Amino acid sequence: MAANAKKDLKAHVKRRERVEAHVHAMKVEVAKDITKIIAEAGMTQTEAAYHTGEAPSQWSLITTGKLRGFSLERLIRDRALLSPIAIQIGHIKRKVG
Image 1 (cartoon, helix red, strand yellow):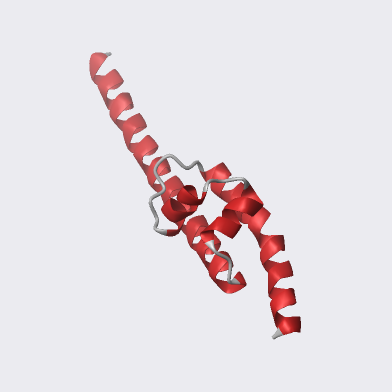
Image 2 (cartoon, one colour):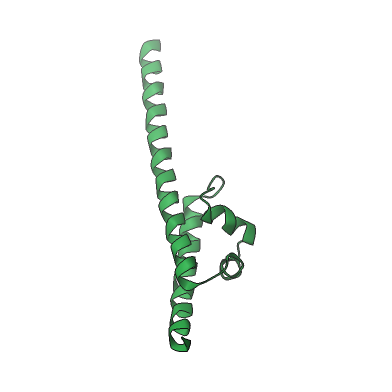
């Protein structure tokens, strides 16, 4: 029984590591999307912070890929909040420019 328990534990740890690696990869992709949205809209990190309720320092971490402490859900929420604003800002800039 003890050998089976060790084997099960090792398998569980490996599965957990794979899941964590996959979640991290998704966080990186969402952070890249966010960085692209901010850049294409010509927004500053302070403006992004204003529209999402995050602190500007948090945007610095996100845009430089320092994602420890950020949940995938939080990043997705921020991306969703920024997307319509980026579209509006883009339309305004196109009309003016």
